[in-house]
View 1 (cartoon, rainbow, N blue to C red):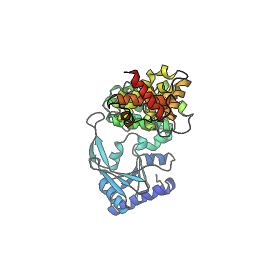
View 2: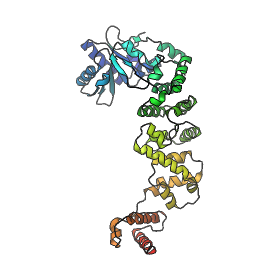
View 3: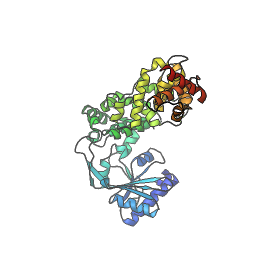
View 4: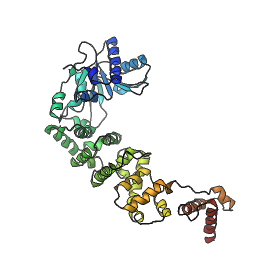
Length: 412
């Protein structure tokens, strides 16, 4: 089958691909378009990330491509790959055709440079194991050694080989995402391999950062809820960590989020979404998350324990402030979304929009001016002045000074 790329790719992407093809001809090597872009072309799509594989030195090819086009280059010697960054923001990933051998489940693979067909055999699913020749006499020809096109037509997701999921369990997460995105279904044998890998504890060995990155990709899907729930069905979430789950709270969160137009501004949506499936510090530590993410999960636990305080109608704003101050905004927003109580939403909303931004007018210098000796008491007094301002008890600097004096006198 011959593919006319000029009819399948956007002009800008086609220009990048042509530059690579011309360079491959000049260097006398074979270059192929591979990966998700080939799959999407065969599915009727028109664009995507450009991945090229060459039979030869992929790093040298990427470096030459960058030099010819005044682009930036970054190489990864261990894997024989290189990235070319063009000035307009576009990118080409170049790899040497290679085979991979895994010593044990989820280990880093041992690399051996080889032919394109063997390179395609190391990939996850047949629909991702096709290539289009970019240069030479066979330019435009589709290479499909494992029946990817047949599986596309039949809407099947099929693993390339029996050890695929044991070699790399993150492929299971990818497969479930693909099922949701393309409306495909894992064929019977592949589904069996999935269950075997989960039962064998494959996810226990998988690096947390790779699992985290794969899970984050679920949230970029048009409808993330369906594939997320399938993770629970296969026992994948608890295989990663006992605190990771997709349940009624996850469903409620995404269903309610649809009512809000667009993502909330100023928030880390990756963290916000992750709290819906990994709501504890332990779960986020398993996923090698940033310390702020782990702190957010800890704050979420505190919020759950503070439901009674937050549910009181007309609750003093200073009491709400004392409960919520220091909590990560994503934890506050998430808890507000999943909470049923109107007063909880109202109290959190007032804090996030108003009281959480209020600052005291007093400083340490003001306390020194009152003759108060510096020490831990400063923190206590400044906070008391702030709470007085929040409640309207001491709206200005003058009133806050009087409040501090009264506090000091009461403790004599």
